[in-house]
Image 1: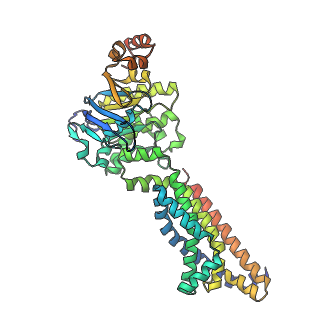
Image 2: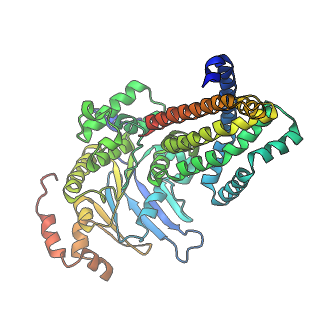
Image 3: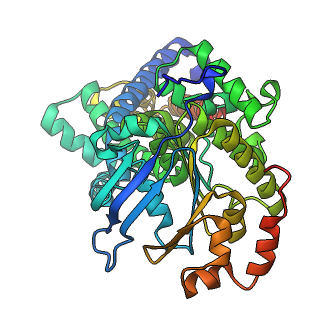
Length: 273
Length: 203
């Protein structure tokens, strides 16, 4: 995936990969019902897909099948047409970005060491890693000279999550998985992080699979929203269509009484779109 | 204090023996305790067994354990080291288990998700993050071993205990005071050094 065909900025990565789930199901041992019921889903290359649903609906489990942190008990997960199970799990994960709500920055590493952790695993030399780290810090708008040598405890919640995003993007993944990444920060910081990830997505063209229970966040970020309930995908549509034509009562209630207001918000051109 | 002043060289030599006894025991104890601690932290069932066994060993009175070991493997330093290693296990293993169980699961999830192998996760994330707590165990174990190692003199293993036993048998309180002071100073020094180390590795 380093053999990018991009002519102008070869170090920016090669866009996104297509992610496909075929009848993917997950049943945890001893559980009465599957966490995820046979899900068929195609996320096109470069798409920003949001998995939306209440807690416990299986959206995180579904996300984690893509990088094999959870192995589907039935069905198949494919990236660019290749079965993920055909690849070594560790090697697969090094090519997929991963960001979680708790951020999970390594407290004994500096910001630069955190961001450079996957390049180091991949055996990049120090100069290339250092250059990449600075490039990423600029991408997420943290001045490299100021932030490079800080420890995670010296960062605000919003800064830490930016570093988490930079770390996930370090080795130019073509798929970025984000599990409720902005749920733990306050509303103002969340809005600015949402702007950032939307911009990063536009700039890099990485396929993003983003889990949230926040309807507004989903409407704001997604090219396509995948609504889940009790392990099933109940609707897959672009944000506007979700508001116009909710597939069932569950989706109607999820988007809620504010559907009218939300439609208006979508129609208003967003500054950053 | 007079014995300490007049026989400084002898006290220093015995102190040296004491330090060697403690350091060798500690090193051997760590080689055993770290893998057992990892196992105990990973598997609740193995953990229960390991902690029960080492806890039971810890309750054996030190003189009784030494007497049993002398019967089995004879007098001398190796026997004393075996006893000290046994006593250190419970404290060290508890430290390793507490340290590893205290690692934020989000760090492990991140590490695995970013493509660390299980081994890399343990060595590069879990151990470094657990280190201050593990070192806390090492500190408590070291201080205990400094005290316990005085009984090693009873089985011809040398150390500061020699002064205590000689002082008791020849009714020479000066020797006892000298031995006790030297042992206490050693324990305090070990405590301070390891506290500094704990602070240094805290993130």
